[in-house]
Amino acid sequence: NAGVTQTPKFRILKIGQSMTLQCTQDMNHNYMYWYRQDPGMGLKLIYYSVGAGITDKGEVPNGYNVSRSTTEDFPLRLELAAPSQTSVYFCASSYVSRGYTFGSGTRLTVV
Amino acid sequence: GIQVEQSPPDLILQEGANSTLRCNFSDSVNNLQWFHQNPWGQLINLFYIPSGTKQNGRLSATTVATERYSLLYISSSQTTDSGVYFCAVDYGQNFVFGPGTRLSVLP
Image 1 (cartoon, chains in turn brown, green):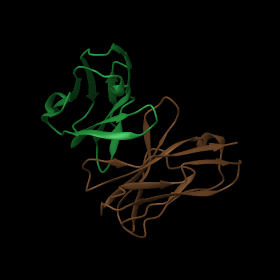
Image 2: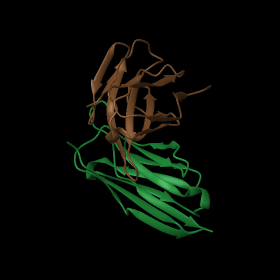
Image 3: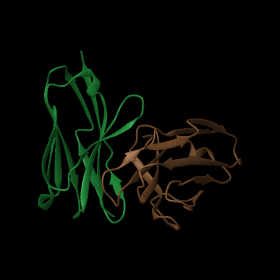
Image 4: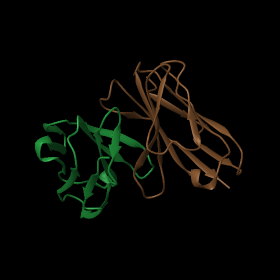
């Protein structure tokens, strides 16, 4: 039982490059989320999805895109990376809006 | 939007001591969770507690939704309890996180 799996764990990007952070869950949860955590801060919601084909913006969506083609997968796309996107990114899933299960995070540095 | 506050921001304890962490929120919420982020960054769900009291070993939590606060109790603290404790409130279709309480338990 893997839970929520995020890849990669670490990544360094140059300014202007693009990348996709992968997130997959095997618990058949319908809700999935992407959060970012800046150093010493709490978590801020980027995007969330309440089911396949449905996505919505959170508090800080600018510079990111998501898609949800299957129940299991919820990739986060960064276009034209900027230093302000240096952060730790967490994916989470839940059944409806009950207890979250988090992935282990992706530490991204933009230089 | 909703405001979520946590107190204290920082807490240092000797091993074996007890502590109470508080979470206040500014509006009615559907649900509330407590999380522990360990020093390696991993986030663990401690409690899903929309109201009432729950206990899990040395940890317990109480939410008084009508008064808009929740408390997390840690008894007989251990060094492995160190890290940041977040509360998160369900406001709409997702959870809004508080800024956290950083706990350091000294041996």
